[in-house]
Structure formats: C-alpha cells, structure tokens
Length: 468
Image (cartoon, rainbow, N blue to C red; front, side, top):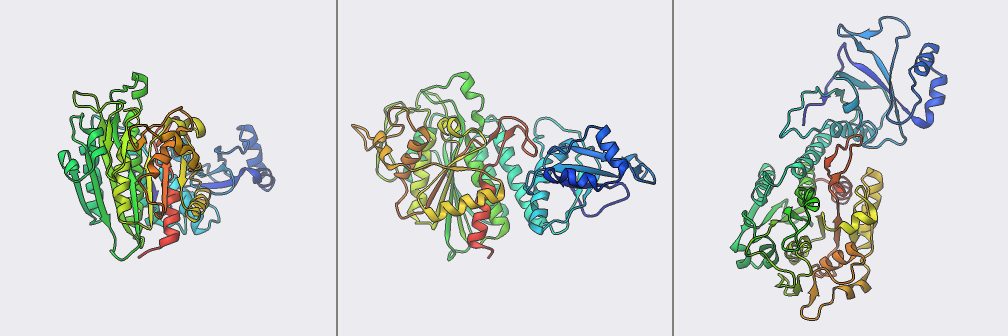
C-alpha cells in the first residue's frame, strides 16, 4: 500500500472541513457571504461525498508556492464510519490534507482507516503513477491499529485479486507461511498423499486432479493456556466445477474462490498484530478443483475425517467437502470459538446480494455480540437460520449424507447444515458465506477482491479477549 499519511502539516497543507449532510444548511448560514456565493455558484449542494474547494476570505487564494487550494468543505453522512472519508484519496488531487474536526479517538481511528483503504491499489500487473494524497494523522487516531488493519485488508484484496495462474495452492501456502513466520507462529503444511495418511480424505479427493497438489495449511500462535479460537478458510484457488464443469462465464470469477482463506489470513494478521489474549489456530484447506483423469465424480462416496460417509451430489459443490475435513480437525481440540469463512454458495448472493454476507451461528450469545460489532463497525452481515428440519434435504439412500441434498431449495442454509455435521453441538461455531468481491467501485472499496466481515469479527474478539 502506498504511503498515505503524514506526521504533520506543512505550508502547502489544505484544510478539510467535514460537515454532516444533515447539518449543511445550518453550517452554510454561519459562513462568510463570499463562501456562500462561491458554493452556490460552483453547484455545491452538500450531498454526501461532495468536495468544495473554498476561496480565501482575505489574503492569497492559494497555499505555498505550488498553487494548492487552502481549504475545502467535504459533505459526509452522519455518523462517522470507516467509509466517511474513504472516497477522498481517489477524488482529491495529490497533496497534503488536514482534517479540522473535533473527533473522538475512536472516530479518528475509523476515519484514518477509511483513508488508508481508499488509498489501496492493486498494482501487481500494472503500475499506477497517480500520486496518492496524504492525510495528516488525525489527533487521537490509533496509528498502530490503523496500519495493521489496513495491511491485513490490503493483503486480503491482493490475494483475491491475484489470478490462479499466480496463486495456486502452493502460493497460497507460501503466503500463509510468510504471515505465520512474521509473527513467530508454529506452522506446518500437509501435502498430497500425506493428506490420506493423516486422514484428510475430502481435501485430497477434491484437489487430486490438479497440477499443484492439495494441501492443508495449519498454523498456531499464542500462549497455550489462553482460550482457543480457531479460524478455517476455504482455499479453492480455482474452481472449474470439476466434472460438473462450469460454463466459461461461470469460471470468470473463480480466482476469488479462495476468498474465505484470504479472510481467515487477514483476520489472523489483525489478531496477532494486536496481541489478543487467545490461542489462535488457522486451518486452510488449499486446492484447485480441476478436471483430469483422476478427478472425483458425481455420486462418488467419500468417507470423511469424522467417519461420516458423504455422497457427492455435484462436483461443483466442492468447498463444503474440504471445509468439512478442516472443521472436523478444528473441532477435535474443542476450541472456545470456531469460525469459518467461505465463498460457498450462489444462493447466499441471490438472497442477500454481494455486499451482505450470510452468517450462521449455533450460539446465541456469540451471534448477538457479532451482530452488535457488525453494526458498530459498518461491516455488515445478516444472520440466517440453521433450520434443523431442512436436514431432511441432506438425507441419502446409500450414504450418511448427500453433499448437496435434493430439491434446490435453501441452498445456503443446507450448505451450512451440511457443515454443522462436522462440528460438535458443544462447540460455539460461526459460519460466514461471503462473496469477497466488489462488483463495482464504491468509496474506499474498488472493484475487485474485498475483505468482508473481518473488521467486525476482530472488534468482537478484541472486546471479548483483549490484549495479552
């Protein structure tokens, strides 16, 4: 991420005057006549996201020697959120800016994070020469938190944006190991036939047809006596659909099918950087769902890690299979909290759209805390039910379960219910069905890979566990 902050103002710094849209008329009435006339003449209406550079009341019209404007009014919606200023790095000319506003430390931190996210550029394949505007650090902002969270979210975006030709299971494992190493976490990777030896049959089955062997990435961090929190992320680096082959249009976005793994890694970075008092474990089954002579078939039976037999209803519903093995392993340690992230179902997108991930939880206290954090952090998700009567849709005549069920109804719910078979009733468990992608540009959220839910989850974990 480019440098987008400055420690102090200089002679060329432009002052930003933020005004809530609901307060704009009252604010305008108190301003000098020259400003009122100027804003009216330039068409500034006080709509959210508008920027109006202001003429001087007296003295020179510009700052310094380079012709930079001295002040600007910016209209924002109340209340302050991480996105309030996030569009400015893309709309303001290069230069240095300073907020003139009375902010709480929490608001200052949110606004600074939004500014940092607005500076994000995916520049692996094409250089972006546009200079990024700098913001003088707002007074009271938690710089360490802003920098670590911006780094985590940028990493999520970079991973999801990288095409499968450059990010297969091996490269995803490399990224995870680099993260683990930077925080001195204990890591291991189980690869290829070793998956069968170590009883991860579904991960091996789904990924065995690809040129890069399937693998399970596993790292742990924190003091052994602290409460266990385990993250699981779906790492399908590319999904052809397998023998139930997707049409070409359906494959266009499949580089992002490891978006769940990216969320887990981003959240892990936030947790470790903040030093939360918990024992973290991260499990990422990393595969490519490819087609070759040894690809798995529709109607194959897989004996899963926890002993259940599963009939493959569709090879294009592979994510739940690899997650099941990882969840079974995670559950074996009886963590205090188990959270998985997955780009799992199109049904969730049909129901809730790209911006609103579905989430499921078997523990009411945890669900309530997460929803409160979601609203507080402007990081939305929507709870859907683990409606137990729908388990009948997963019944199968020759195996314990069907991976997809029958009828085509409630696709996101039945996928979550399938995963629930691999988690003990006594383990508090959260499942996020995310899109991990922005289909179009929005302030601070460029088209492409996106971190969803992890700011809220981190806030919840920080409130629950605090720092070591």
